Image 1 (cartoon, rainbow, N blue to C red):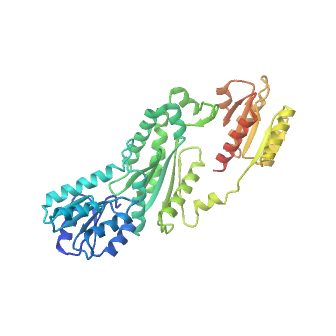
Image 2 (image 1 turned 30 degrees about the vertical axis):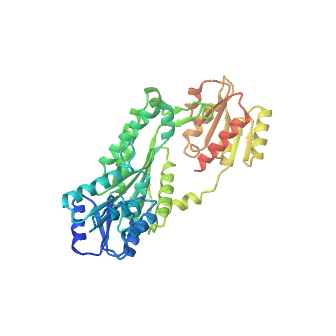
Image 3 (image 1 turned 90 degrees about the vertical axis):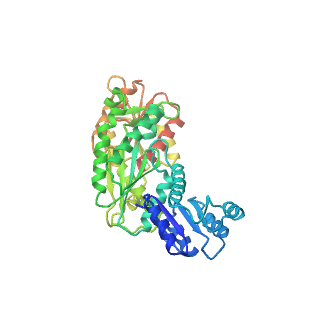
Length: 437
């Protein structure tokens, strides 16, 4: 992978070759162009980290640097000027035009290498995550762009920790940072020096590698991650298999333990001509993998587009309400229909199952039942154990104020009665979006 790249703009023959050899001895790939036009094309295509500009070019050195700085503003490379002049005014003109350094020729080889290394070190240090010590999203996208431009076989993997934000909210920054650092170490252990690992966001990583290795890496990561997950939770949460969020907006929400989802795309199956098209497929494929509640990965195959699979899925806004209280039942049904949902409602549990089979809802508002029978709890358990209904979101409303007991049935939300109508419909909107994502 072109993780470190320099561009030399120089019309001469021998000196650019010498500079290239010196820079490549430090592990940096170097391109040489002898015209400004060719240099600008390389700049646009590859976004090099360092540009060395010689005064041997046809245009004035300050003018060339101004043009390079203007066209490279988003990627902000280091620009070093080379000149036969040692005049102070020439140095000032070049530095004011946007160069980071001015080197007068001839220059000692060791000094040249030391200066170039210093510029590259500062350049990369500005694009490193403090927690994981990985390249940040800006740098990762640059490497993806270079990889696509090379027209070689490559594969990209989007690795995501699901429910990371919820974990961070409950367990805090120190614990969540430790999780990120541990997973980073696991991922690094599965890669070699030719691979690239960067960070898109907290709990979101990009891997660029050879297509032949991707499924082996993904299989190892899902297994390794699941092997350590419980170590990040206290004994009670690990045994329950979920955590409960608190606060005004999230009180009573059940959240699964973290898992990892991996989306994989490859140049073998599709010709990606831009970073945006690659990212669209990558995120859509990862979203498919996330539909599995456990750690899993999805590989985009030929003629099977994960992106299309997501887009073609019908949006399900159907709700089933099981509420014995006639007045509340009517109020929930009427309000739901006014908000644009397709609502089916029943007051007894005996007809509930047939209604659910017929309606195929995205969400069920289910009353737990009276304190003696708790029929709603039993129905919730039954639905969550059935592979045909386990993905349906369930809000369990109840007069029994035992949050743990209710959530152990598999319910997504524990909602104690009495509740506010605005509150429950906020949850309905959120969960239906989640179901359709």
